[in-house]
Image (tube, rainbow, N blue to C red; front, side):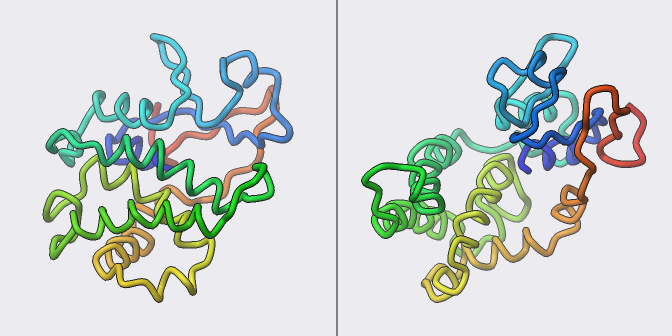
Length: 197
């Protein structure tokens, strides 16, 4: 999701191949060293980390100024301790000796940090979204939707508004169309749709 957000923001067009991880095509396995998605094959090599794909796309073109933000640990905190706690909370049966309530509590600390950072601003660093907003929001959305009724009872007014603006935005709609599973030999679709590569 976050790789697609940056690709759309940058105005860059890519060939999209929708991969289902339980049925990985041979061409995908040949291209992706980690056999995970997202995976972007460029003239300079393969990028298979979503944050790195975001940065690659924004280095092609950054018309919305997403890279214009202070140095911050928000993305690193999201990608390490928060994402780990999120996975333990969302998928407790995948891990031995995991208490999902403890995992939710651990993840909640990061949500509280975001709520303080937002304060009265619409986005983490002011009036417009930056890379940190779009790198973190997809994971906050996942966290919220594990138990949305519980999430909505928490005193995270700023985060709740921030998340709702994201989920109801045109940009969110732009990245959410469903694509047919790609198989070896299929013609890829262009993403964003309607743009030339």
